[in-house]
Length: 434
View 1 (cartoon, rainbow, N blue to C red):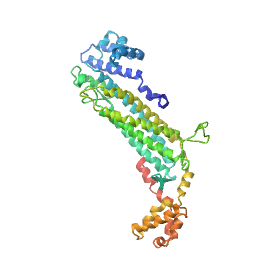
View 2 (view 1 turned 120 degrees about the vertical axis):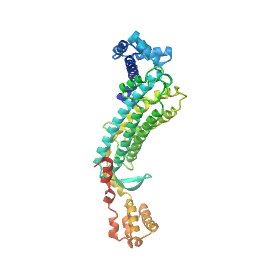
View 3 (view 1 turned 90 degrees about the vertical axis):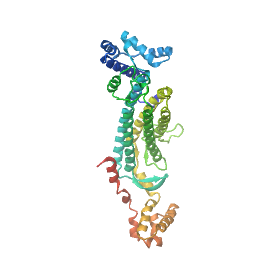
View 4 (view 1 turned 120 degrees about the horizontal axis):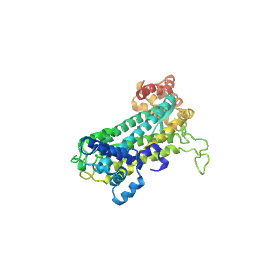
């Protein structure tokens, strides 16, 4: 994580202070239940909460202890004993380090998912607003980067709204799958701790119980989580690339907002570059890159090893912080996006009616011509229009083989732009509801 691409609320989830606070809560909740079960004195459990609830855990001190003991959880427990006093001996009864580490990580990932879901809601709201604004604004649809048939700019945005609705659902599913708790002790058998402790901690930390934890929470959950983040990032990149293409000088149908005083190039004062969406494209690549190591973490040795640990110290913060920033950046791009309907119309007209070729093709087949003959006639005239010999309608009207099947008046009816937009309401109802 670097500050340039980070937002404070997400960063705070991954701070050492937050981590140690979660560790304390896990330990304290477990001790509460142990006290209720008669394993530890109730007075000790109360003292642990009293001393630790408002304590400021000294990160530097914990790091100092860890340099000696070479174990992060032991370092924390040692520091906790300095704060709590003798009653700290009742902390961590029957637990193992993974109980704390894995449960904490899942709390952090669940909280991160909550922010990402909120980010998605903000992006969806921006997409919906702009889609409604340009619902019936004609623009050219492209396949292979080449002019195809007319659509509307609103339909373009509705496509992304539908995609990010799916993205939101993926994040909700990922959150539900990752939000589990393990307090099962060494190799996950509960030999030294009652399963009721796990149930109590899970409820207190807004998690569910991991059915079988084998000392670690199975990493298929984490793989699914980071894969979901990667898919969401890919959707962001698809939207970013669309805007980057639309901003090209030759196209210029839409453009990132260019603020007063902004400069696009150190060398060329005229430049207005799509830097925000280029940035999102790059960030999406990073988020996707974290999915693979998460999948490689699934295969651990027997009941537990820590080959996953170093990986997760990177990918947990980096993937969530990066995606959070990219989502917020894209929301801002959509909210302020400059849209040029006049340029869209100009680009629609640039190919001299070629965008209506399919309708003529279908009309010829319905008039009795074989599809192969119909295609040949339309393509022959389309290629002439493509080469600058005139517009398609005039060329078709001058072709006797065409007019034998379709009189001029019928041909003219084939070049109605409104024909292509007749189902926009249907699309919007499917995406946004009635």
